Image 1 (cartoon, one colour):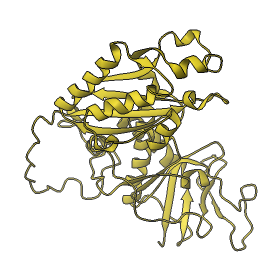
Image 2 (cartoon, rainbow, N blue to C red):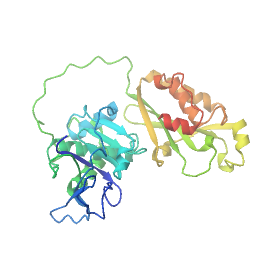
Image 3 (cartoon, rainbow, N blue to C red):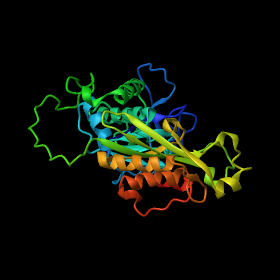
Image 4 (cartoon, one colour):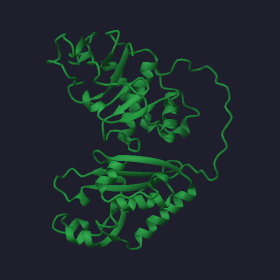
Length: 348
């Protein structure tokens, strides 16, 4: 692990590592070594900080990028991200980051990995810019060994720009597009041998099913009302319909006062839920499905629209989302049981 570097999106004040003493550190074991930024960047942040041994342990595991997202990002950056692995857990928060990159491993704090929202896609693009920067040898570990958190204002500004552009990139434009200036990976321009195309699955269609959930910020809500589950179907070309299920006339109800009524059952309604993708802490998971599966999912939505009762004990927002996913034939939800939005959120 000699010379390993971390770059990432940090909160106000930059990286926060155990052992830091007002931006400078003692030199004893377990303390953070700091190298101040050079070149008059004026950030007020250290240019590099060395992690105490064992604070973050690089390892295997993680999940690959979703196929559609990977295709979009590879088209924009002009490089291969098949080796990139995503981890969601406590590592990022342990150093004060929303997300960070170490080689081809991306680490996100809980609630920050959301490639189905514009903000989440821009953050992913930011981190993938760091993958490319590190591959190109543009990021140096000044300590020579161990793991260094490097905060270079110029590289971070570049990652912000490229992340925003990558989030808005459309693969359909890639035939004429060129890789982003200054971010062409080594070896770009070398012709690749033609690869035989895999046979296309019947009626693959390019549809996606997206399931999502978030927890409400308000404290003290009944468990059955503590969060929200939703589902969306994305058509080829990017058109997306989002659906949620809630009590009809809920705006006139009080979650605590009407808890008994909501548990026993009230008329329900299916509503457009596009705003769910922008909620704080939202989590999503997407699945490639066929046109036939998309039609089956829409059939389940139509069933709920015909007057399904909303009940916290039997049919609420998260059970609606699961029913739609089951109707689409998504294996992850076959036989699964979720009793509350909070449980649904944990499952995602």
